[in-house]
Image (tube, rainbow, N blue to C red; front, side, top):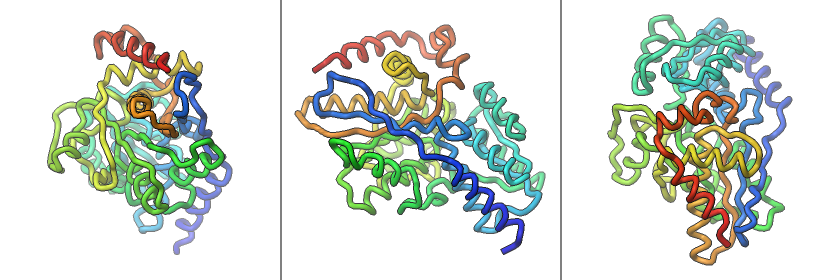
Length: 349
């Protein structure tokens, strides 16, 4: 193995050893009798999101497959969080990094990419990202990391401290240690693939429910079996939902999918802030609305158990958007009906 590659792998592993695992916390919802809801807080990674795990795996995958060399320019198609995390690892390795992002990407994420030494190449919408990244990498002789292709294969789903192994380890001493359900949204589909494979590998009786926002084709593809579906518009829930069925999306290991209204996702992160005093990103709202729906079904069936989902990133990145009431009203209309649903439902016994 070339000295630079072995040194690069050592640097990434050293960064991993300096990092603690993320916290799994229980939501305080007293009205749920015998049903416990947990969120795994991925916002505490060094780059502030779940995508830190993916970026680490993608870099190791590229290095071990001989795709990255000293001086390689790394190119990625990303709406923000993956690009922030990849910029971080590129900086550790001393590699130039260019993120292909939609113009609508939150300014805070663009600033973070720059903070870690990365640059942005802007496109008008999410459907344009992949082709633009492919062309850019070809033009400059760089390497297209392609999270949407490699996410499901870059992570060791059997263990090695992946997110699934971490969740089940942290749940071991809880009243219901094997979750009834794990709820996850799909961006690349890589995390849901890791969760689903690990559940089956370990023989757990946990169902995997994947939630999808509006203007995304994952749900419709899952329902119809048509993997050629495409959409002309971008997801309004930043970081999740795709206009085409990505290669990393693995429907065969998903037990159920739910389509979540975008306004419900936004209302849910505001509700969560009142509940725990912390802001979460919009994809967390999608996850949590789906989680509450599963909890409601369990209540109606007199079932007990635990449900685990993810807090994918912090809401501090979205103060000018999803936490700006004028912006929310312009983009999503009236979200008050969902606030009322959350208020009424959370008081049910």
